[in-house]
Length: 358
Image 1 (cartoon, rainbow, N blue to C red):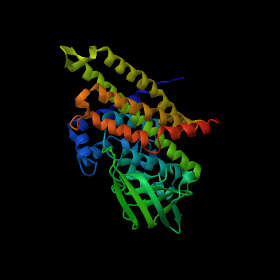
Image 2: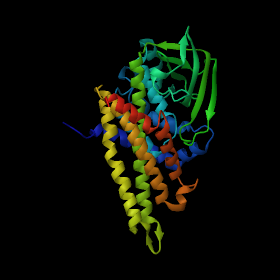
Image 3: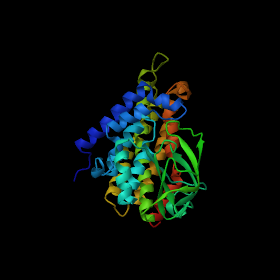
Protein backbone atom coordinates (compact mmCIF):
# COMPACT_ATOMS: atom_id res chain seq x y z
CA UNK A 1 0.00 0.00 0.00
CA UNK A 2 1.34 3.43 -0.98
CA UNK A 3 1.30 6.12 1.69
CA UNK A 4 3.05 8.86 -0.26
CA UNK A 5 1.98 11.15 -3.08
CA UNK A 6 2.46 10.06 -6.67
CA UNK A 7 4.94 11.80 -8.96
CA UNK A 8 2.02 13.42 -10.80
CA UNK A 9 0.62 14.80 -7.55
CA UNK A 10 4.02 16.15 -6.52
CA UNK A 11 4.50 17.78 -9.92
CA UNK A 12 1.02 19.37 -9.80
CA UNK A 13 1.64 20.79 -6.34
CA UNK A 14 5.10 22.07 -7.27
CA UNK A 15 3.77 23.81 -10.37
CA UNK A 16 1.09 25.65 -8.39
CA UNK A 17 3.49 26.53 -5.56
CA UNK A 18 6.26 27.77 -7.87
CA UNK A 19 3.88 29.95 -9.86
CA UNK A 20 2.21 31.39 -6.76
CA UNK A 21 5.55 32.10 -5.09
CA UNK A 22 7.08 33.72 -8.16
CA UNK A 23 4.11 35.96 -8.83
CA UNK A 24 3.43 36.58 -5.14
CA UNK A 25 7.00 37.64 -4.39
CA UNK A 26 6.90 39.85 -7.50
CA UNK A 27 4.07 41.89 -6.02
CA UNK A 28 0.79 40.04 -6.58
CA UNK A 29 0.44 39.07 -2.92
CA UNK A 30 1.19 42.49 -1.46
CA UNK A 31 -0.74 44.31 -4.19
CA UNK A 32 -3.90 42.31 -3.53
CA UNK A 33 -3.43 42.57 0.23
CA UNK A 34 -3.19 46.35 0.14
CA UNK A 35 -5.63 46.91 -2.73
CA UNK A 36 -9.33 47.64 -2.60
CA UNK A 37 -10.58 44.34 -4.01
CA UNK A 38 -8.11 41.71 -2.81
CA UNK A 39 -8.03 40.39 -6.35
CA UNK A 40 -5.27 40.37 -8.97
CA UNK A 41 -6.80 39.42 -12.34
CA UNK A 42 -3.42 38.68 -13.94
CA UNK A 43 -2.45 36.34 -11.10
CA UNK A 44 -5.85 34.63 -11.32
CA UNK A 45 -5.65 34.13 -15.07
CA UNK A 46 -2.17 32.62 -14.77
CA UNK A 47 -3.32 30.28 -12.03
CA UNK A 48 -6.26 29.16 -14.12
CA UNK A 49 -3.99 28.70 -17.16
CA UNK A 50 -2.05 26.16 -15.07
CA UNK A 51 -5.29 24.21 -14.71
CA UNK A 52 -5.61 24.78 -10.95
CA UNK A 53 -9.27 25.69 -11.21
CA UNK A 54 -10.18 22.51 -13.02
CA UNK A 55 -8.35 19.99 -10.85
CA UNK A 56 -11.57 18.68 -9.34
CA UNK A 57 -13.85 19.38 -12.31
CA UNK A 58 -15.07 16.37 -14.33
CA UNK A 59 -13.10 15.48 -17.44
CA UNK A 60 -16.15 15.83 -19.68
CA UNK A 61 -16.33 19.48 -18.56
CA UNK A 62 -12.70 20.14 -19.45
CA UNK A 63 -11.29 19.47 -15.98
CA UNK A 64 -8.76 16.93 -14.73
CA UNK A 65 -11.37 14.81 -12.96
CA UNK A 66 -9.23 14.37 -9.85
CA UNK A 67 -10.30 14.00 -6.23
CA UNK A 68 -10.41 16.31 -3.25
CA UNK A 69 -6.91 15.25 -2.20
CA UNK A 70 -5.48 16.72 -5.40
CA UNK A 71 -7.45 19.95 -4.94
CA UNK A 72 -6.17 20.07 -1.34
CA UNK A 73 -2.57 19.75 -2.54
CA UNK A 74 -3.11 22.88 -4.64
CA UNK A 75 -4.71 24.59 -1.64
CA UNK A 76 -1.66 23.75 0.45
CA UNK A 77 0.62 25.24 -2.20
CA UNK A 78 -1.44 28.44 -2.33
CA UNK A 79 -1.48 28.65 1.46
CA UNK A 80 2.30 28.27 1.46
CA UNK A 81 2.59 31.16 -0.99
CA UNK A 82 -0.02 33.32 0.78
CA UNK A 83 -1.74 33.55 -2.59
CA UNK A 84 -4.66 35.99 -2.84
CA UNK A 85 -7.98 35.55 -4.60
CA UNK A 86 -11.15 33.48 -4.84
CA UNK A 87 -9.65 29.99 -5.24
CA UNK A 88 -11.35 28.48 -2.17
CA UNK A 89 -14.86 29.61 -3.08
CA UNK A 90 -14.29 28.83 -6.75
CA UNK A 91 -13.25 25.18 -6.33
CA UNK A 92 -16.02 24.64 -3.78
CA UNK A 93 -18.56 25.95 -6.30
CA UNK A 94 -17.21 23.47 -8.86
CA UNK A 95 -17.44 20.67 -6.33
CA UNK A 96 -20.97 21.62 -5.28
CA UNK A 97 -22.27 21.79 -8.86
CA UNK A 98 -20.55 18.54 -9.83
CA UNK A 99 -21.95 16.79 -6.75
CA UNK A 100 -25.38 18.39 -6.45
CA UNK A 101 -26.28 20.01 -9.76
CA UNK A 102 -28.56 18.82 -12.53
CA UNK A 103 -27.18 17.70 -15.89
CA UNK A 104 -28.19 21.03 -17.42
CA UNK A 105 -26.52 23.00 -14.61
CA UNK A 106 -23.33 20.98 -14.97
CA UNK A 107 -23.28 21.48 -18.73
CA UNK A 108 -23.88 25.21 -18.40
CA UNK A 109 -21.44 26.11 -15.62
CA UNK A 110 -18.68 23.54 -15.21
CA UNK A 111 -16.76 24.09 -18.48
CA UNK A 112 -16.33 27.80 -17.81
CA UNK A 113 -15.55 27.25 -14.15
CA UNK A 114 -12.92 24.64 -15.00
CA UNK A 115 -11.00 27.10 -17.18
CA UNK A 116 -11.53 30.08 -14.89
CA UNK A 117 -13.35 32.07 -17.57
CA UNK A 118 -16.30 31.94 -15.17
CA UNK A 119 -15.75 32.58 -11.46
CA UNK A 120 -17.84 30.81 -8.84
CA UNK A 121 -18.25 30.95 -5.09
CA UNK A 122 -20.34 29.44 -2.31
CA UNK A 123 -22.56 31.04 0.35
CA UNK A 124 -22.67 28.69 3.34
CA UNK A 125 -22.53 30.25 6.81
CA UNK A 126 -25.35 32.35 8.25
CA UNK A 127 -25.52 34.81 11.15
CA UNK A 128 -25.86 33.20 14.53
CA UNK A 129 -23.15 30.60 13.87
CA UNK A 130 -25.42 28.58 11.59
CA UNK A 131 -22.65 26.71 9.79
CA UNK A 132 -24.12 23.33 8.84
CA UNK A 133 -26.98 22.59 6.41
CA UNK A 134 -29.29 21.41 9.20
CA UNK A 135 -29.19 24.92 10.69
CA UNK A 136 -29.54 27.03 7.52
CA UNK A 137 -32.60 29.26 7.39
CA UNK A 138 -32.23 30.81 3.93
CA UNK A 139 -35.30 29.72 1.98
CA UNK A 140 -35.94 28.94 -1.67
CA UNK A 141 -39.54 28.92 -2.88
CA UNK A 142 -41.27 29.73 -6.16
CA UNK A 143 -37.96 30.34 -7.85
CA UNK A 144 -36.82 32.98 -5.36
CA UNK A 145 -34.39 33.20 -2.44
CA UNK A 146 -34.92 34.94 0.90
CA UNK A 147 -32.34 35.01 3.64
CA UNK A 148 -28.91 36.19 4.72
CA UNK A 149 -25.44 34.72 4.31
CA UNK A 150 -22.28 35.93 5.97
CA UNK A 151 -18.61 35.48 5.08
CA UNK A 152 -19.19 34.88 1.39
CA UNK A 153 -15.95 34.90 -0.59
CA UNK A 154 -15.90 37.40 -3.48
CA UNK A 155 -19.60 37.35 -4.42
CA UNK A 156 -19.09 40.59 -6.34
CA UNK A 157 -16.71 38.76 -8.70
CA UNK A 158 -18.63 35.51 -8.96
CA UNK A 159 -20.65 34.83 -12.09
CA UNK A 160 -22.51 32.15 -10.12
CA UNK A 161 -22.99 31.57 -6.39
CA UNK A 162 -24.01 28.25 -4.87
CA UNK A 163 -26.23 29.25 -1.96
CA UNK A 164 -27.03 26.91 0.91
CA UNK A 165 -30.78 26.76 1.63
CA UNK A 166 -32.99 24.81 4.00
CA UNK A 167 -33.25 21.79 1.72
CA UNK A 168 -29.94 21.86 -0.16
CA UNK A 169 -28.56 24.39 -2.62
CA UNK A 170 -29.72 26.99 -5.14
CA UNK A 171 -27.81 28.76 -7.91
CA UNK A 172 -27.77 32.56 -8.14
CA UNK A 173 -26.25 34.51 -11.01
CA UNK A 174 -24.31 37.70 -10.46
CA UNK A 175 -26.84 39.93 -12.22
CA UNK A 176 -29.84 38.57 -10.32
CA UNK A 177 -31.80 41.39 -8.61
CA UNK A 178 -32.55 41.42 -4.92
CA UNK A 179 -28.99 40.93 -3.70
CA UNK A 180 -27.57 43.37 -1.14
CA UNK A 181 -23.80 43.07 -0.65
CA UNK A 182 -22.09 44.48 2.44
CA UNK A 183 -18.29 43.96 2.39
CA UNK A 184 -16.78 43.00 5.73
CA UNK A 185 -13.50 44.45 6.97
CA UNK A 186 -11.73 41.19 7.72
CA UNK A 187 -8.16 40.81 8.91
CA UNK A 188 -7.10 38.55 6.04
CA UNK A 189 -7.00 40.88 3.06
CA UNK A 190 -5.85 38.10 0.71
CA UNK A 191 -9.41 36.69 0.86
CA UNK A 192 -12.26 39.18 1.04
CA UNK A 193 -15.58 38.46 2.73
CA UNK A 194 -19.03 39.93 2.12
CA UNK A 195 -22.37 39.64 3.87
CA UNK A 196 -25.10 38.98 1.32
CA UNK A 197 -28.84 39.47 1.86
CA UNK A 198 -31.30 37.90 -0.56
CA UNK A 199 -34.78 39.38 -0.95
CA UNK A 200 -36.97 37.78 -3.61
CA UNK A 201 -33.79 37.00 -5.55
CA UNK A 202 -34.35 34.86 -8.67
CA UNK A 203 -32.53 31.54 -8.30
CA UNK A 204 -32.46 28.03 -9.67
CA UNK A 205 -32.97 24.96 -7.51
CA UNK A 206 -30.31 22.27 -7.39
CA UNK A 207 -31.40 18.64 -6.95
CA UNK A 208 -29.33 18.19 -3.82
CA UNK A 209 -30.13 16.48 -0.56
CA UNK A 210 -29.05 17.62 2.88
CA UNK A 211 -26.47 14.83 2.96
CA UNK A 212 -24.84 16.09 -0.24
CA UNK A 213 -24.79 19.64 1.14
CA UNK A 214 -23.08 18.33 4.27
CA UNK A 215 -20.36 16.80 2.11
CA UNK A 216 -19.70 20.15 0.46
CA UNK A 217 -19.17 21.74 3.87
CA UNK A 218 -16.85 18.89 4.84
CA UNK A 219 -14.87 19.47 1.63
CA UNK A 220 -14.47 23.12 2.66
CA UNK A 221 -13.06 22.03 6.04
CA UNK A 222 -10.46 19.81 4.36
CA UNK A 223 -9.36 22.60 2.02
CA UNK A 224 -9.04 25.02 4.93
CA UNK A 225 -6.89 22.45 6.75
CA UNK A 226 -4.67 22.10 3.68
CA UNK A 227 -4.28 25.87 3.37
CA UNK A 228 -3.41 26.05 7.06
CA UNK A 229 -0.73 23.39 6.73
CA UNK A 230 0.84 25.22 3.81
CA UNK A 231 0.85 28.54 5.64
CA UNK A 232 2.25 27.07 8.86
CA UNK A 233 5.03 25.38 6.90
CA UNK A 234 5.96 28.67 5.24
CA UNK A 235 6.07 30.54 8.56
CA UNK A 236 8.27 27.83 10.06
CA UNK A 237 10.70 28.11 7.15
CA UNK A 238 10.68 31.93 7.28
CA UNK A 239 11.42 31.87 11.02
CA UNK A 240 14.23 29.35 10.66
CA UNK A 241 15.87 31.31 7.85
CA UNK A 242 15.55 34.55 9.81
CA UNK A 243 17.21 32.93 12.83
CA UNK A 244 20.17 31.98 10.65
CA UNK A 245 20.72 35.44 9.18
CA UNK A 246 19.65 37.95 11.86
CA UNK A 247 22.61 38.83 14.07
CA UNK A 248 22.56 40.02 17.65
CA UNK A 249 25.43 40.30 20.17
CA UNK A 250 27.98 39.29 17.55
CA UNK A 251 26.29 36.24 16.04
CA UNK A 252 23.11 34.80 14.51
CA UNK A 253 20.14 34.73 16.87
CA UNK A 254 19.61 31.07 16.03
CA UNK A 255 22.41 30.20 18.46
CA UNK A 256 20.26 31.22 21.44
CA UNK A 257 18.79 28.22 23.19
CA UNK A 258 15.39 29.81 23.79
CA UNK A 259 14.87 30.45 20.07
CA UNK A 260 16.16 26.98 19.18
CA UNK A 261 13.52 25.45 21.42
CA UNK A 262 10.83 27.69 19.98
CA UNK A 263 11.67 26.67 16.41
CA UNK A 264 11.87 23.00 17.37
CA UNK A 265 8.45 23.19 19.02
CA UNK A 266 7.02 24.77 15.87
CA UNK A 267 8.48 21.99 13.71
CA UNK A 268 7.17 19.11 15.82
CA UNK A 269 3.68 20.64 15.78
CA UNK A 270 3.54 21.42 12.06
CA UNK A 271 5.13 18.53 10.18
CA UNK A 272 3.15 15.62 11.73
CA UNK A 273 -0.11 17.41 10.89
CA UNK A 274 0.47 16.81 7.17
CA UNK A 275 -0.92 13.30 7.40
CA UNK A 276 -4.08 14.52 9.12
CA UNK A 277 -5.27 16.57 6.16
CA UNK A 278 -4.03 13.94 3.69
CA UNK A 279 -6.12 11.31 5.41
CA UNK A 280 -9.14 13.60 5.71
CA UNK A 281 -9.05 14.21 1.94
CA UNK A 282 -8.44 10.51 1.22
CA UNK A 283 -11.36 9.50 3.46
CA UNK A 284 -13.57 12.06 1.74
CA UNK A 285 -12.69 10.77 -1.72
CA UNK A 286 -13.33 7.16 -0.64
CA UNK A 287 -16.52 8.16 1.20
CA UNK A 288 -15.23 6.35 4.27
CA UNK A 289 -17.60 6.08 7.24
CA UNK A 290 -15.38 8.39 9.29
CA UNK A 291 -14.85 11.03 6.57
CA UNK A 292 -17.00 13.70 8.25
CA UNK A 293 -15.33 13.13 11.61
CA UNK A 294 -11.77 13.37 10.30
CA UNK A 295 -12.65 16.45 8.21
CA UNK A 296 -13.76 18.14 11.43
CA UNK A 297 -10.59 17.02 13.24
CA UNK A 298 -8.33 18.21 10.42
CA UNK A 299 -9.92 21.66 10.35
CA UNK A 300 -9.83 21.95 14.14
CA UNK A 301 -6.26 20.80 14.64
CA UNK A 302 -4.62 22.51 11.69
CA UNK A 303 -6.50 25.73 12.31
CA UNK A 304 -5.09 25.75 15.82
CA UNK A 305 -1.57 24.69 14.76
CA UNK A 306 -1.47 27.47 12.16
CA UNK A 307 -2.55 30.08 14.69
CA UNK A 308 0.02 28.92 17.26
CA UNK A 309 2.75 28.80 14.61
CA UNK A 310 1.86 32.30 13.41
CA UNK A 311 2.15 33.69 16.94
CA UNK A 312 5.49 31.97 17.46
CA UNK A 313 6.76 33.17 14.07
CA UNK A 314 5.97 36.79 14.88
CA UNK A 315 7.86 36.44 18.17
CA UNK A 316 10.82 34.74 16.43
CA UNK A 317 11.10 37.68 14.04
CA UNK A 318 11.25 40.17 16.90
CA UNK A 319 10.26 43.77 16.25
CA UNK A 320 10.19 43.45 12.46
CA UNK A 321 7.60 40.69 12.68
CA UNK A 322 5.01 43.17 13.95
CA UNK A 323 5.41 45.63 11.08
CA UNK A 324 3.10 46.16 8.11
CA UNK A 325 6.04 46.18 5.72
CA UNK A 326 7.17 42.65 6.60
CA UNK A 327 5.12 39.87 5.03
CA UNK A 328 4.89 37.67 8.13
CA UNK A 329 1.78 39.63 9.10
CA UNK A 330 0.05 38.44 5.90
CA UNK A 331 0.36 34.80 6.94
CA UNK A 332 -0.56 35.68 10.53
CA UNK A 333 -3.85 37.19 9.36
CA UNK A 334 -4.45 34.25 7.02
CA UNK A 335 -4.05 31.99 10.06
CA UNK A 336 -6.79 34.00 11.75
CA UNK A 337 -9.03 33.34 8.75
CA UNK A 338 -8.38 29.59 8.67
CA UNK A 339 -8.92 29.39 12.42
CA UNK A 340 -12.30 31.11 12.36
CA UNK A 341 -13.86 30.50 8.92
CA UNK A 342 -16.74 27.99 9.14
CA UNK A 343 -16.24 27.67 12.87
CA UNK A 344 -13.49 27.75 15.47
CA UNK A 345 -11.65 24.53 16.45
CA UNK A 346 -13.80 23.99 19.55
CA UNK A 347 -16.91 23.61 17.39
CA UNK A 348 -15.33 21.04 15.16
CA UNK A 349 -13.90 19.07 18.05
CA UNK A 350 -17.40 18.96 19.51
CA UNK A 351 -18.76 17.72 16.17
CA UNK A 352 -16.02 15.10 15.90
CA UNK A 353 -16.88 13.88 19.40
CA UNK A 354 -20.56 13.61 18.49
CA UNK A 355 -19.81 11.77 15.24
CA UNK A 356 -17.48 9.45 17.15
CA UNK A 357 -20.26 8.49 19.53
CA UNK A 358 -18.70 10.11 22.58
